[in-house]
Structure formats: structure tokens, C-alpha cells
Image 1 (cartoon, rainbow, N blue to C red):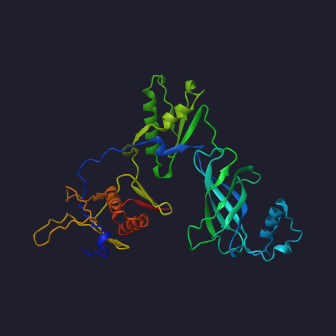
Image 2 (cartoon, rainbow, N blue to C red; image 1 turned 120 degrees about the vertical axis):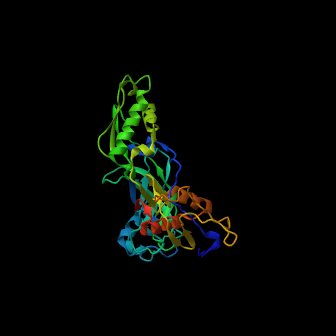
Image 3 (cartoon, rainbow, N blue to C red; image 1 turned 60 degrees about the vertical axis):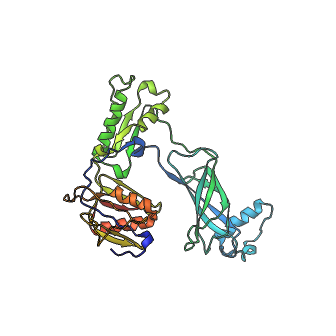
Length: 366
């Protein structure tokens, strides 16, 4: 086996199959689905970044000069002629956006904002976002938040986009309405399927049917491959929050969802998730100094060819080398965890395994 970087070498000995029974995994409904009213949306605003070291827009650009002149006038320093700002290079016109998380936001919550240049500014490094009103996505929306604060450029290669950590202060509550008599659950895209919605509805009904208040009621019904309608019993409608919380915490046995095997890699967040029983067949790949070699069956050490243990080496083997199914993906991910493999390298390795046809699942890169 070739080791291109000994301290980061990962040798995966993949025999054919994990013969032990797959341990039942149980999750809550809220890990698979959300309320239909519980969605993400964005606020936006147009503002100015000030204090730039000569990297801002040209003062000859009216789009930047006009709002700057209004700010100066509001501060008691009116500018009678925009030509007076012609030599300004310390200010940049920017678009400011803020993502409201699921569940909404309450007054005085602080959220991150993203800032992007709209003019000729070449860099926002060292700047400060001036107080900017944040409105909803529709024209005429009221001001829901105010954003300001020091600019942090996350990627030196793209200094025209930056972040203000906790820069938006919510001024008007943004919360979804509380359901009264019924609500709809929407299954997350990676879990969609008629098997998923029918099983979730069945689990909710079984869980509620066992309570004294059930009185034989079936409250959940699968409508299609993504949505489930849930009726709130009349006795719960005066105070539906505890009832909804109970529904969202209903345990679901994942193996009963009959999900297709798929692996979802989120490049931006550096996360890897999967559904179904994902298997990896024997394969040999290398990525950025990390080598993965699989053999079937696992090698037997001999005096002439001993099996050397290293802290950066992990072996995964099974008890039935005659079975063709391969080992489970979670064993590979566990090895990544033990060796502290960075997220981008994990995703690169999984992409290589998939390209060779040895990852038995649909691969989704987002």
C-alpha cells in the first residue's frame, strides 16, 4: 500500500458485508419534517460601508453619492452639490441580506448579515457597515431589522463579499402563526417518499392513540409523498403548543421509512448525511495525501508481512467475506472522525468512491 503522507494515511479494509443486524435508529418527527408555515426567508436592504482605505466606490457614481449625501445631511452636514464627493473613495454602496431561520426571530434577536458590493469597490476589507434598514422581500415591506457593524471578509479571494456577525438586530417580530385546528407537516426533500409520509402518519396515530385523550381518533393522514395533514383535537385547540410539541417529538424508526440509499454532501457547511443502508464496495482511492485501500477479505498478518498498527490507521472488516454487499458508510465516516479528516477531504474521497461505482447510493452535492 502506498502511503503519500504517513500521518494522514487511512487504510480501510472493507470486506464484503456487515453480518450483524443493523441497529435500529430512531429519530423524532422534527428531524424529518417541518411545519408548512415554518420556512426560511430573507430580509434585504441597501446600505453603505464606510471607512474603507481607498478601495470604495468612486464619488463620481451618483448611486453611491446620493445616499452618502443624505446621511451627511441628516447628520447636520449638508452637501449642496454631489461634485463635492467626487474624490471620495472610502465608501461603498452595498446590498445587505439576512436569512431568518426556521421558527422566525423575536425582537432584539441578533442575526448575521451578508454584505456585497453594488458599485466599483474592489474590497470591503477594513470597512464598517453603516446603519441599514432591512425589509422583507416584497416591495413596500416594513422595516423588520437594522443592521450595522464591522465588516469581516471571509474569503480573501473575493473581498467584495463580507459578513457582519450578529449585525442585524430584529426590530419587529417575525414568527409563523400558531395553528388552531390543524396543520401540515412537510417532509424534508431527502426523506420524501410515500413510504416516509405513510410511516410518519402511522407513527403519529399510534402514539396519540395510546393516550387517554385519543378516544379512538386518528389525527394524521399522508396526503402525498411530502405532506402529512394533522388535525388538532378540539380539547387541545385552546392551547395547541404542547400538542404540537408532542407530535414533533414522536419517535420514528428510520428503517421503516423504506428510504432509497443516498448520500448528501453540503460543501458550504462541510456536512455529510445519508439515508438508507449505504454500502461501500472494495475500492482504492487517494485524495490530498490520504490513501484509502480496501481489500477483500482483510489481510492475515504473517511473520514476513506483519500488520503494523499506527495511530493514523484504521481497519474496518466484517465477518462474512463471501457476501458482495460491502461495508457500511457510517464505518468510513467513523474512521474519518478518529483521524480528524477535514470536511472538504471527506467529501472529495466520497466523490472518488462514487465515481468508481463503489458507493451504492445516489450522491447529492450541494
